[in-house]
Each structure stands twice: as structure tokens, then as C-alpha cells.
Amino acid sequence: MKPAYRAAVLAACLLAGPTLPAAPEVINLWPGPPPGDTVQLPPETNLTRSTDHLAGGRPYIRLGNISTPTITVYPPPAGHNTGTAVVVCPGGGYRIVSIDLEGTEICDWLNSLGVTAVLLKYRVPAREGEPRYLAPLQDAQRALGLVRAHAGAWGIDPHRVGVIGFSAGGDMAAILSNDYAERAYPPVDAADRLGCRPDFTLLIYPAYLVGKDNVLAPEVKPPHAPETPPTFLVQAEDDPIRVENAFYYYLALHRGGVAAELHLYPTGGHGYGLRRTDATATTWPDRAADWLKAGGWLAPAP
Image (cartoon, rainbow, N blue to C red):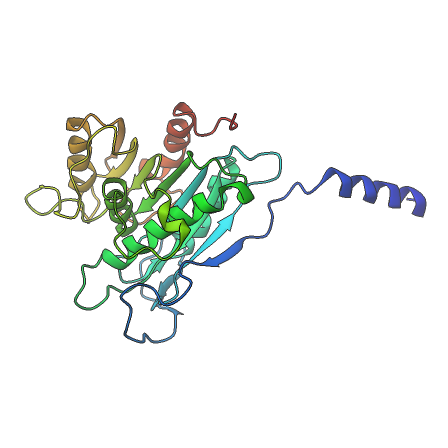
């Protein structure tokens, strides 16, 4: 290629703008110490061991000792932005955060749908003397407010901000979807004056929503329309965390008049993320994409 022609092609490409997503942006959730944190934790670290459960035949990162929660913003490719955003809440039993299996890999999938993915790295393990969900819930409420505060800069419609949660992250997402009228912490700035109610919710093999008696956990307020956002649920019948979590929460949604869609699968276990196996439960992303499309969340924002 002649130098002059090569230069012309390069200039045209630059004028056309990027076709790949912009670099992810990491933002600390809190301008100072997170609310209620007074104990110094050991350094944040990957707690994965060689004997740990694999997902789809591969290991994954179990991030522990998180004392500085963040959100990482993954924009979709240029020209493929629907204006919808989803806050991603990985699982980990409120002890660790499955930061890749149920975090970055989910963000890549959402980007492929034209959705801005916002990965929430919330505080773990549970703080001594506090409910296990409290610090993560505070972080999730703060994250929703920050996303809406930055909506213009990030190309997001503030009325198209959803949440997806896995396992313990599903528990947190369900609590957030029903308990948003007041923050679970003293407001710190203007972002905390913006709504933290998700516009839609996806719960993937959620944990802790019901007790052994199959009654909703006390922190999960009974859902009611139109307060509770439309909800998508997935769980396998052989899930050791109990399929009853999704089933009885769906019944509560139904009784409360909340639009909901439930997918139960005979096999799949727990903690598979997006990694496909022979279990039909791992086809859930196809069903979720259909649900998002039917709800209008994947159509370009007007």
C-alpha cells in the first residue's frame, strides 16, 4: 500500500470513530470509608484453591476481603448502544465475589446485546454483628444511584437501568428490588438522592430468598406491582441451594401482580454462570435475551 493511500485510510478510520467498546472505567463507590466499616480487613485477594468447584470444567476467581467496593463500567461497542444498563451482582455466599464467572463474563454477554454492563464489586465477607446482606445492599443501592447520576455521560437512559444477580447476588438484587424507598445508609451526596429501584431484575439461581419453611426471608419484602420491577428467574431442580428459592419467590411475585417469568430446569446444579455444559439450565442466556427483547430493553432508546 502506498504511503499516501495508507495515510488516507487511517484518517478515514479515525474519522469514523471506534468500533470496539471504550476501555472499562473503574469508580470507587464511596468518596470516603464505606458506611459502618471500622475493622481493617486483610488485603483483597483471590481465595481460589486447587480443590474448589469448577464451572464448565474451568476454575474461576473467588475474590475475598473486599473493603473498597467499586463499579466497573463496560460500554457496548460504538453504534450498538441500546441506552439500557444492567448492574451485575456476582455471587459468592456473601463470603467472596465470583468476579469473572458471574461478573466480567456476564458483562461481555450484556455488551453483545448492546447493553452497558456495570460490574459491582461489593464488600465481603459479611461484617461482624451485621446482617450478611447489609453492606452488599448498601453498595448496590449506591451503585444504582451512581449509574443514574452518570447516565448522560455514559449514554444511558436513567429509566432503563436493571440489575442481574447470581446466587447471593440474586438475594441482594431481590432485596434491592423491594427495598429502595430509603437508603440503608445516610446519604453522602447528590447521587443518593436519585432512585435506586431497578427498572427490571434478573435472578439467576438465587439464594437465601426463602427459609426451610419456604416462607420469604424477612429481609425480602413481599413484592407488589407496580413497586417491584418485572423479574426473570432461573434455577435448576438439583440446585443444592434449593430450587424453592426461585419457585416460591416467583409465587410471591405472581400473587403481588408483578410481571415475572420463571424457568426451572431438571439439572444444572449451581454456579454455572454463562459456561455452557450438557445441562439445559446453561441455555438460560438465550431465554434471558428473549425476555429482555420482549420487554423492550434491547430496542434502541428513543
